[in-house]
View 1 (spheres, rainbow, N blue to C red):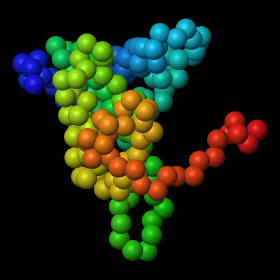
View 2: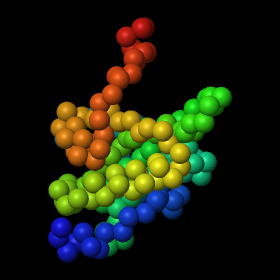
View 3: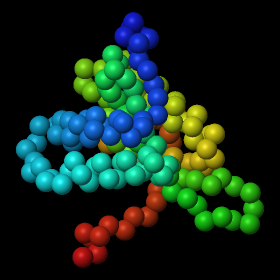
View 4: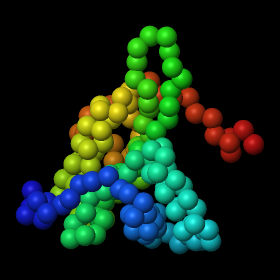
Length: 161
């Protein structure tokens, strides 16, 4: 790893980070260069969902900071399981919005963030964490210990319309 990686601070996001996370979300969404219509209520909608999620614990966001700037993030949404009569874990995690700025990629930052997620998941009684990877990111997740299991059956609103 480069010297820069020694200067990376890994931490959980707080409500103070929401505006910076919103800016990175836009960068992430528009990175492919495809022209898109901007959602008029994006700043308010993002703020409401992420701020509320952080405050209630429904969303947990890990960030990597370099020189006081967020350069990468990983979101995990928690889904509470219905209790069973036998002992078992309480949560399922939905991993999403995994992003590292282009100028900080291939330095191990994303892998370090996933390590943070896995440690937290063990400590928080998360049974499993799932992600819908892009074709390009499958190897990244496999290197981090993610594996294909039984594929879930999925209902999509647009298919049933």
